[in-house]
Image (cartoon, rainbow, N blue to C red; front, side, top):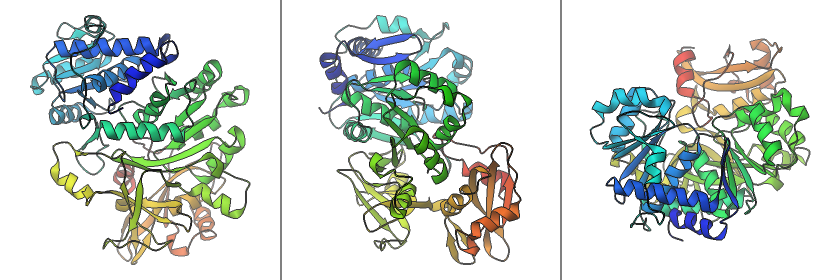
Length: 511
C-alpha cells in the first residue's frame, strides 16, 4: 500500500461486514464506512476539487470527522484540521494560511464561520454538518450526491495527506505536513504498539483535530479494528462505554488517566475487557502510574512524540510498579526508539551526549513530517541534515531507554546551573498531598531565575509551601527546590493534554 486511501479501501473489501466506526447511535461496518467516504470524495470532486487541494474541517469529534479525513486520503485532497477551541482571529489565520477550497463545519460554528466568510476569499464552498444554513451545502445531501465508485482520481505516493497545526505556544501556529508514507508508517507502528487486531475495539476521546487521535486511530485502521468515537472526554462516559462496548484499547493523556482513577464510578465499573491503555502527550507522574497499574493491571503503554514526528515507546512488560529498583526506575522513562527510527541526543554544539548526559532529542523516522506549510524558515530550522530537532531534552541510559527532563525552552538556569522542570515536578508529585504540579522559571535578580511550582492539591489535602520544599530536598539537590509555591484550583492545559506553560508564565511568572 502506498496511500492511506488504499488502506481504507482494503478494509472495506477484506473486513466488509465487521464493525468499523461507532458514534453515538450510528454504527458502520467497514463496507458502509468506506462507501460513505467514496461518495464524499466524489461529491467534493464534482465541486471542482483536485489532488492536493485543501479541505478544512471545523468540528468536535463525530463520525463525519473520520469520513472527511478518509475521503481526502482516497482522492488525494489534503485534510486540514482546525482546533475548535481557538478564537475567531486564530481560525482566520489558519484558514488563510492553509487556503482550503472547501470548509466543512458543524452547525454550532455557523455564526462564527459566517462572520469570517468575507475574510476567507479562497474558500469556494462551505458544507454544514448537522444543520441548515442558506449559504452552505448540507453535508448529508452533498455526500449522497457522490458516485458509489468514488472519484475518478486517487491519491498518489508522495502526496501530502494532512495538515495539522501546532498549538502555537511559541508564536503563530505552524502547519505540519504529513505525507501518506508518514501516515502509513505511523499506522503500522501504532498497530504494533497498541497490540491491535481486527476484532479490537478502540475508544477515541482525544480531539481529532490533534495528531494524537489521528495517529492512534490509524493503528486501528491498519488492523481493520473498530473505532468508537466520543465527542469529548468524560470519565463516567468513558467507563460506561468500556463496559457496554467491551472496549479493548484506550488512548488517554495522563490527566485523563488521573480523572479515571478519581472517578466515583470506577469502583463499580467493569473494565475487564481493557487490554491496552496508551498514555501520551505528556509525562505521567510516577505515583499516578503506580496507582493506575494496581487498578488496571500491566496494560499501559507510553508513547513519545509530537505533531512533527513520533519516536519512542515504553511497552507493557516494562511497567512493573512492584519490581526491582531498576524496573521501578523505568516507569519514568519514555522508552526506546521505535523500530525503523533513529534517535540521537546532542548538546548545543551538535556533539552526541554521553550516557546520562542531557541534551536535545533528534529524530529520524518514516513517521516524520515533510515540513511546515508556507514556512520554509521554520522547516530549515527544525529539519537539519535529515534530523528533526524536537526541542525536547532528555538522556539515554545504558540500555537505550530515554528519560525526558524538559522542553528546551522550559529549562531553568539558576546561578549558572541547569534545572529541568520535569525532575522537580516528579519530586513534588511524590508528596501525598499533591494532585498535579507544573514548574516554571521566574526572574530572580540574584540568581537569574528561580524555580516556582504551581500546585493543585488533592481534595481535602493541606500542606505548607515550606513543607513541599523540604520534601523536595529529600529527593533532589537543594538548589533545585522551588523557591516559590503557588496553590491553584487547576492547571491550564493545551488541546493535546499538555500543561500550558506559556499561560502559567503569563499568570504566575513574576516571581
